[in-house]
Image (tube, rainbow, N blue to C red):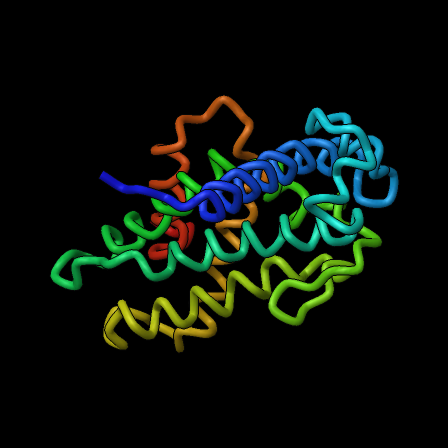
Length: 203
């Protein structure tokens, strides 16, 4: 049995409230964009009066920055999911993409913000890259994917250096990410991405 102190319970409740605010804010930012969304909009979506929101976040900018940090931490963690090096590279990629699909399912609105135009004008960075740059999201993904390939793919399995392979695969992943709301089975889309990444378009 876990016994928590009153201070620990308060902190847990505070973190729960902060997460709820962030998840509600993600929907507002995705629908309205960063510039158009107001603190009043964010408070209303989260079920708070605007002054109450200041108990958890100091500004709209802080909320947006916290959203990006939350998503970045969850996506970065997918690159650390263990893979079985005895499996074919396609299966190792499937393990990676499956972990990322689960994050996408739970954080779809935040992905839309970071990867789309909704972040335009946001004074925020993603690992040092300004989100005002539309290429920030894919550059972040490329960098982590290159590191994953170096750790989890043998040189004989890649026709090009990991950085080049990561750029090509990231382009395919992002192209199909933007079509994820089409009525295509996620497993079929994943198979197609892996096939294109490993074999290209020639028969």
